[in-house]
Structure formats: C-alpha cells, structure tokens
Length: 315
Ligand code: NDP
Ligand code: OXD
Image 1: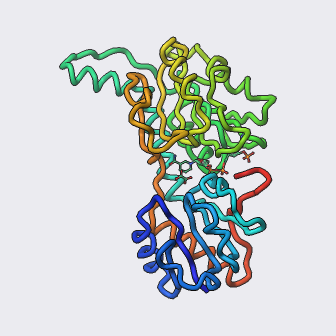
Image 2 (image 1 turned 180 degrees about the vertical axis):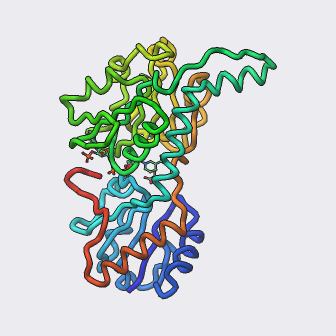
C-alpha cells in the first residue's frame, strides 16, 4: 500500500516530509520522479493534477484534495470515474479563513486604507466612524467556512445574513436559501462575501446584475465585495466598471480566474481594490497531512470516509 502526492505547483518535498513525520509507516511517494510501481498506489493527494496522472494509477482507492475546494481536481478531464474524493474540512483551515474574512470586513468598516493613506501624507484626519451594527454583511456559501465567518462577524455586532443552496439555521444570522431568495439576500447586503465553491452555477455570480441589486443604504452609500471563494465567480470587467462608476465602493479579492494574477491586470493598480495572492486560508502541510493520515486509517479499518465530495453537486 502506497500514498502518492501529485503537486505540480506546490513544493512537494515539504509535503512528503510532513507526511513522513505524521505517518512514519506510510510508503510516501511523489509524482513525477518518485512514483515507483504505480500498481502499489492506493491513495493519492493532489492539487491541480495534470491529465492522465490519476488515470494512470490502476489500483487507486481514494483521492484527497489538499484544499477545501475541489475544482483543482475536478478540472482534470481524465479524472477516473467512481473513485471517492475527500476534501479538507479542518478547524485550522477554517480558522484561517475566518481571520481573513473578519480582517477584511473590519478593514473596510474602519476605513483602514484611508487611514494608511492619511499616515503616508501626514494628515491628522479623525473622521467620524460608524458602529458594526450599521453594516449588513451577507455571506454567499454557508458551508464549513461561511458558517464560521458568519458566527464571528455576528459576535462582533455586524448584521449578518447568509445564502446557501439548502436552508441553514444559525442563531443570530438571517439564512436565505436558493435562487428564489437570492435577490432579497442581495437587497439587504452592504458587504457581500463569497465563500462559494466553483461550480457551473456559481461561475460569474459576482456580475453587474448582482452588484446592481446590493444595498446602497449602508454608511458608504455603495456596497463592498470580498471574494475568497474562487476567482471564476467574479466577472472582473463588471467589478472594475462598478468601482469606476461608484456602483461599488471597494473590493477585496483573494482569488482570480487566472492565478497568479497577470501583471497587466488592471485589478492590481485600481485604488479601490485590495489584492491578496490566494492566501485567505493556507493549507498547513503537517495539519493537512495528519487529517489525510487519519482518513487513510479510517479507510483501512473499513470505516466510512469523512467530507466526501458529492460529484453530482460538484463540491
Ligand atoms: P462547503 O462545501 O462546506 O460549503 C459550500 C457552501 O456553498 C454551502 O453552504 C453550499 O450550500 C453553498 N453553495 C454551493 N453552491 C451553491 C449555489 N449554487 N447556490 C447557493 N449556495 C451554494 O465548502 P467550504 O465552506 O469548506 O469552502 C467553500 C469554498 O471556499 C471552497 O470550495 C473554496 O472554493 C473556497 N476556499 C478558498 C480558500 C482560499 O484560500 N481563498 C481556502 C479554502 C476554501 P449547501 O450548504 O446548501 O450545500
Ligand atoms: C482551498 C484553497 O480550497 O486553498 O482550500 O483554496
């Protein structure tokens, strides 16, 4: 029984040594140079696997996504059918995402970029601020990540709502569900956060029409967008046009349709855009390897796997 990492864009040696540390008895291999006999490989963990690599493992039993999102695996056109895919659901990853969402909601709420600019210009401008309860935050995606962020923002006093495919019940959070309730959710939202997975239904969801439906009653007179879900969800031209016309007050973007964000993207230099390099929630190799090793142990002892991807839903 062997375990294979397929990580063309990540430092694979960091991951192999983390896995050997947390699971010393596991036969850990890596694509492309340390595959050994591919017939030995029962388990593979991947991020952006090249076509035909997973397909070339004849005895593969489980695929692990090394992130919470699985689009990096599902985009493999040669993905072998019928093999269960397990995604990451780890408090460490969730906590990091919550930090990011809380940080950026607070950054906009407390106008930190304006204060930074004032400091740069040596301007002492103690402008009036408003209360958290003046701002309505709306989170698209009330899964593992969205629920945790919603609860923390609620505890800070923001008016928090969330939107998901199926109805959720979170104390103190107004939960909207399904397409029929999307517009009502948007209409009450001053800061729109995306923690949605990439699926055909969520592609392009942050577009001109969506932005046009957001609340303009908040303290900034125009809404704010924070996208830490996936880059395909934002229509970059629509976001830029809305920022230029004043239909959008500001945006924080962690994810992009093309990553790394190309140097000539106008998003880099737009004064109302805060860019981060897909680092909202970083996967810590030892924590994630321990999670994968626990799942392998479960599988080996005949127990069901946790956090399986539903292939029909695509997340
Ligand atoms: P979950 O699968 O736990 O949650 C996904 C949520 O999105 C669910 O509430 C789901 O609804 C909702 N959803 C999916 N499709 C739709 C739709 N068409 N309409 C309305 N709601 C929908 O995922 P996580 O919370 O663990 O992660 C969310 C995403 O965050 C990941 O897929 C990934 O893309 C992104 N991510 C980004 C990171 C970064 O560093 N930027 C790091 C980690 C994750 P329902 O509950 O009804 O199924
Ligand atoms: C993830 C990610 O999905 O890192 O975990 O984006």
